[in-house]
Length: 194
Image (cartoon, rainbow, N blue to C red; front, side, top):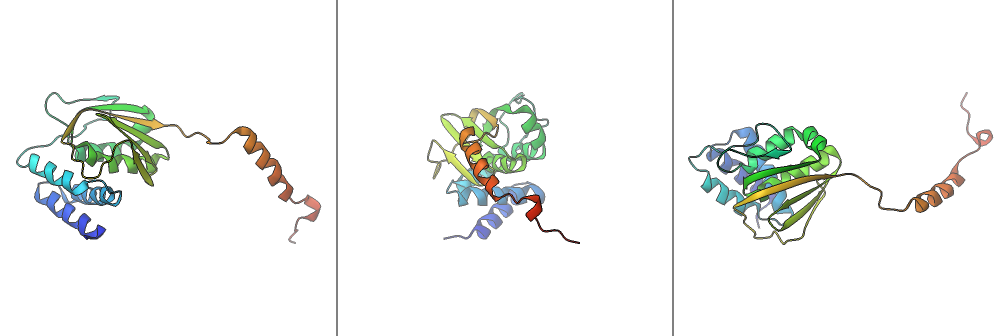
């Protein structure tokens, strides 16, 4: 079995050989390692994507908008992921955005998971029949088994930032708060330092 370090290194070096800069290749290595740790086929998707773009000029988002599309061709998941990560404040501001025609959407997942952590909110991704929930770079849940899944492209991917909400009833909060007040110390009993 390959180590996470080996997966990151081979992904980074292969990406550099395919024409990405060292900086972008570093990001790719981290993202593929992350996918593999979640048991999602990062290496297979990256391998097929690098073959697809050989001797081509992949395009990413130039500006993050509510609706993102190219005149022709598909968006690169790597350049798109880096653009979204760099503009995570804009992702949070827009709350919901779409990307039309994206190659290898699985490669975008770890970038969005890092954005979830950066903005402190869960992110929901939808493409084809797949729904994925990203939670602060801690876990990924999906309605589809993504192990051994290679998705060459998607016509439409939507990103939805989910507002944080309490998972408990306000009565439970009030009850626990009332109980917690029993630990408060009267001012006369508090320690005074002179």
